[in-house]
Length: 480
Length: 127
Image (cartoon, rainbow over all chains, first blue to last red; front, side, top):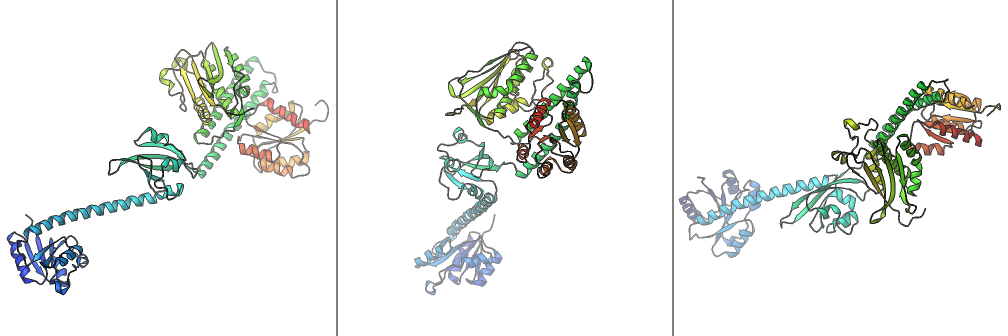
C-alpha cells in the first residue's frame, strides 16, 4: 500500500507533535520543516503528498499562504491544509482564500487523520479536474487555431439555423459580427432555410456560389451540444477553377482542335475537287469510294466537334448566347438537314408545332444542336417507321414548353435507361451495334438543356421505340 | 467572269496542300490565284500584285493572319483589299478580333465549299 507523506511547515512544536503522533499512528510518513523559503525548498525536494502550513499566531499577521512561491519551487501537485489557531476564524477564511483546501484548528483536539484523508481525496480530484481542464483548454486552442488559419470558410449553426460560430475565412467572405443571424438569410439572402437543411437534419453536401463570387463545395457534420441539441458544422472548399489552369486548358484545347481540323480541311477539299471533276473524269466506282471518304471525314469532323463540346461543358467553358426566340425559329436551323436524313433512311418524319407557342429565351444554335442530336439518334436507331418531332405546353404547366422526339425504333433496354446520359456511354448489343457515335451527344444535350433551366429525359421500352423529351422555361411577358 | 480581266485572289496558308486545293477550286471558278505560304510573303505579294481579295490563315510563320491584316490595312496599296480569314481556330474572341481588324469574312476549317465560294463572289461583287 502506498505510504502517504505529510510535511508540516511551521514553528509550533506542540501542533507538530500532535500531528505527527496522530498521522504516524495511521501509517503516514511525517516530516516537520520551517515555514519559510528554506522549508519550502526542502519540501520540494521530498515531494510530500500533502503540505500542512501553519499560519502561526494571528497576532503576527502571517495569514497569507505563499501558494505561488510553493508552486514555483516545484510544489505544484500538492494540496495545502492550513493550521489555524482555533479562535482565528478570519485566519481560517483567509487561508482558504489564499490557496488552502482545508484547515485544522490548533491546539488539536481530535485526530487529524480524517481531515488529511479527506484532503488527499479532494486533492486527487482537483488534480484530475486540473488535468482535464488543461486538456480541454489545449484542445480548444488547437481547434481554434486550426479554424482560424484555415482558408476554407467554416461555421456552426444551431438547430434554429442561428449562426453560433464563424471562422476567419467565413468572416472574410460574409462579414464580421454576424453571429446570431440565421444562416440562410445572412449567407444566401433567403427568407426560408435552404433545401439541404430543410430536407435533412443529418450531415449533408452541397454546392454554392458565395458572396465573393466563388464556387464552394460544402460538407456539414452534426455536433451534439451539451443540452443534446444537434448543431451543424459546415466547411466549404473553394472549387472555383484556377484562372491560370483554365487558361492553359483552353489554349491546349484550342491548339489540339486546330491541329485536328487542319488535315480534315485538306481531305475535304481534295475529295470535293475530285468529286466535282476538277481532277479529271471519274468512274462511278471511284465516285462511290470518294463518297465513303467524304462521309468518314464528316463523321470524324463531328466527333472532333463533339469531343471539344463535351470538354467545354465538363470544364465549365460553356457559354450560351441567349436571345429571345421561338421554337419554329430554332427548328428552321436544323429541319432541312434532319428531313433529308430521315428521307435517306426511308423514314417518315412528322412535325407538329402549334402556332401559339410563346417565345423563349435561349441559345438558338445550342437548342438546335439538342434537337439535331435527338432526331439524329431517333433516325439512327429506327429501321422503319416514323420519327416524330412535337412541341407544346407542358401538361398542367403553362410556364414550360416541352419538345418531344419519338421514334418507332429499337428502343432502349431497361438496364441502360439510366446510363445513356453518361459521357461515352453506348448501348452495345450484338444485334444493335451502331458504329457511329462516341456516346457524347446525349450528355452534351442534357447539359445544354440544364443550362437553359430545363430538363431532358427519356421514356423507352426495348423494341417499342423511344421518346425523348426536354422542357424549356417560357419567357413571360416577352414578345418577339 | 468571261474574257474580261480575271479577278485576282491571294491565298496565304502554311498548309501547302490546302493552298493547292484552294487554287485548283478558285482557278476552276475563273479566278487568278497567287499563292503565299507565310505572313511575310503574303504581304509582299499583295503589295506587288494588288489582288482583289486576300484569303489569310491565322496561324502562319513570319507573321500570322492578324498581324498580316494589320500591315495590309495600314498600307496605302492594300488597305482597301477585302480580307477573308480561313482558320482551324474556332474561338469567339478570334472572330471578334477578325471583325475588329476589318475582315470581310471568317471561315473555320473544315469549311463548306459552296458557302465559301458564295462568300467570295459576294465580297468581290461589292468591290
